[in-house]
Image (tube, rainbow, N blue to C red):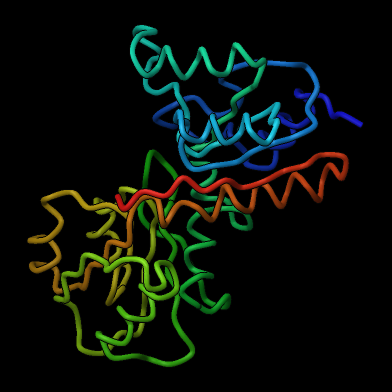
Length: 259
């Protein structure tokens, strides 16, 4: 039995506490399609490849981390934006997006998922690093201290497996005791991680300025990929929707990129 679109979106809006955030883009429903939902597809980014796979699965609603509407809205509807919107509107498919709220959430969020993937202990995790009024980063420890090389290898294996090698700037202490993480393009939290006492900081995608800053701060910096560090939230959203709305079919659909 279908679930009302507005009921699904309202649950996500409330659960992810979108009103707390001053974000870079619109959180919540961005494109409205059919009023009832049978199938939900979740993914990292709103792009044509994800939309095509969602349509193959019969999706009525697509939920992503990176939506189509940023800043002040759509300046024009041309090129890839027009084609993406045409795909959604032609098939009456809705699109919802959750950016910073899905990075932050203590249970469903990307940063919690990243901390879980690399095995940080639950006890003692703490937030750090202000992003638009919200501490977005997450720090923690392993049960035992590791050498810098072993710590970097453990982090890479937890997220990437054997798929790719991380970017590494190993300027921190030879023994790693405290680790900071923030998914996506969050190298600007490097100084906050250092001030927070982290020996190693893990993010997804780096700004050019981050390498020399890591050297000056004497902290190790590891980039595991923007996409790879932000699959956790969308995957957990699919699980959340299946548990909350048993009538829904919900699937996380990967569209991998090395970036």
